[in-house]
Length: 138
Ligand SMILES: [Zn+2]
Ligand SMILES: [Zn+2]
Image (cartoon, rainbow, N blue to C red):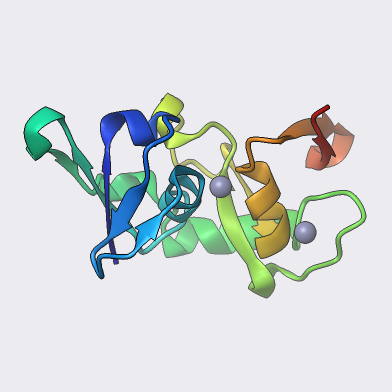
């Protein structure tokens, strides 16, 4: 899948991104997709010249994904018991803010909680034991 978005969108702007199918998706969904393996974002600068096609190293490799599964066991949200096979690898620090793809910088989240992790209305709280919880902002 190829996601096309301009640089401001990737960094949190409000403009929409486009899938290669022509479908418009929200910037939040675009960043959620970009957080997961298998997506190659094409970042466009002014005048739509291509700035960056898929820095694939940003994505967790299959080996790292397995390591995350062994360490985290499943969704790392407090009170969630989704197994690792249902989870997605999430970057603790978003790639757009300079985060890497190391196992240390990643965690497993189920689809629902991964959405919350990227939702602009939710704050993430970190707890001992690498657990996190989400709180809706006022
Ligand atoms: Zn994520
Ligand atoms: Zn979960």
